[in-house]
Image 1: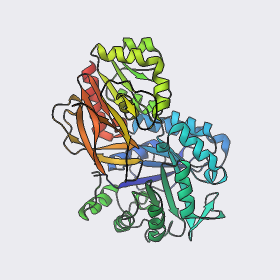
Image 2 (image 1 turned 30 degrees about the vertical axis):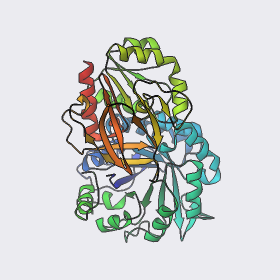
Image 3 (image 1 turned 90 degrees about the horizontal axis):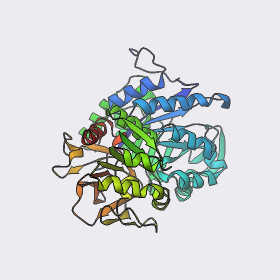
Length: 245
Length: 196
């Protein structure tokens, strides 16, 4: 049977991981490649790198990270953050990423999702949705688009998205559990996999959201050492869930 | 030397790096001559069937010739699907190395994404040392239905589908060994050993 996926997310700024990490014994805890290898060893099923570099002239640094990760980590990984054009997508994939995630660009230019999925295949196009009280936000959660999250997810699927990465801004950072209601609504409305994000505090939270979602994305719970990926997976398995061990 | 056929369909780099990690000498090539001369051929690929068949056109004879010579061949994902005769996804004919057709998943979330298990038939050289029910990484919407006895493994996703093919020197996986962690690297090592 298909396993539920556990996906750590790494925020990268100018080629360095910027969110704190528990891997204190690492020589260089800010090196994305070293962290990626560590998460791979711990049993991560996939990785997501979110490029939060603000200035576009430093974007090339991310391509170098992608290249180095693909040389040393043999599990799938996704790159997101500020991607706007087919050419940028092509470069990221060519350097070894398996998928790209599109957020604001997909909202402002839905045709990009369509042309990207036709060009590279749906399997590598993830549409990321940031939602607050059911409404879709863009520019990293700064601007309300007024669009309904469920409807936008449906449209993204129709445009050719292969997966939805759904972040609840209400739950994000609270560590009080995922947004069950939002996740259930979106996962029930589309026929493509949904990755739930935002709010993971305990293995139980992850178990709960995986009732609806196909995968759970988390950052803080792993970075700050509350739980290891293995601990989360052991918990899920004991509860009868299919996981890759 | 293993030739990875670069026909413009997807993440070649991961396959190259994983094969190198598995100890292979590889060349990524769009040159029919280099494919013909290599000791083994790998056809990776993600994307649509028709555009893959069109782009494979110039390499068709070289690939078929290498297979006919008995050299090890590995098709990955779309590189497995192109081996059969036709696909529901398109109109172009496949390579026809294996009888059969490609069909789309029905009644389940599509694409099939993630780590799923292998129910392996005994004897396939690719799976030497791989424990039964090992998990490997899949991402696809279509799968091959062989019309002859070549199934090396099956996987359950709404239906039991053929997740790997073994026909003499021809091996193919619907999953991505290059993205399947330790298990995948072991399979690639097995393939490299066949080539050597």
